[in-house]
Length: 153
Image 1 (cartoon, rainbow, N blue to C red):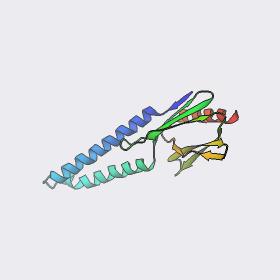
Image 2 (cartoon, rainbow, N blue to C red):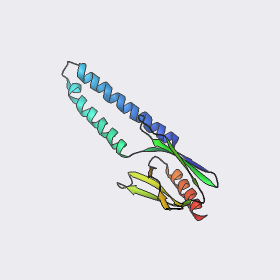
Image 3 (cartoon, rainbow, N blue to C red):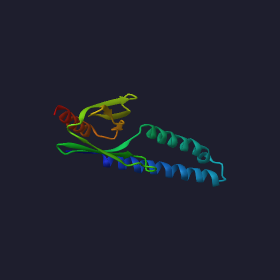
Image 4 (cartoon, rainbow, N blue to C red):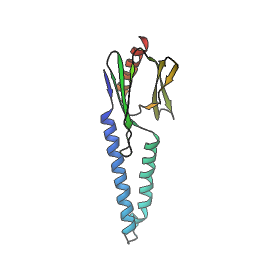
């Protein structure tokens, strides 16, 4: 079984790039235009609104999230949805080491994360929380079903 939000991540990445392009274009127009008309006065306001939306989306910390359940282990891959300065990360958890998981909702569900907990010979280890805000409702139920199956053993 597989949970993958590649399509939603691609849409958000394109949205980031479009917003950056609009901000740069409006900034260039504002810098080089000499006429003082209504549009000229609204350019800083429009740029400010787009920048605010951009910052809110960055604070949401959206990630590409991929989880594959192979029966005896799960493979998790993730990276930030922002198109610049990405760090691709991946890890595997054997079924015998998997202990539990936590799904947390912050800011009234605006930011949702999943955290995996594994048993090791030295105690329990918590992986860093991964953002699952871009998952659809069906993907979230599939993720919960997979993790509950792993937890039951």
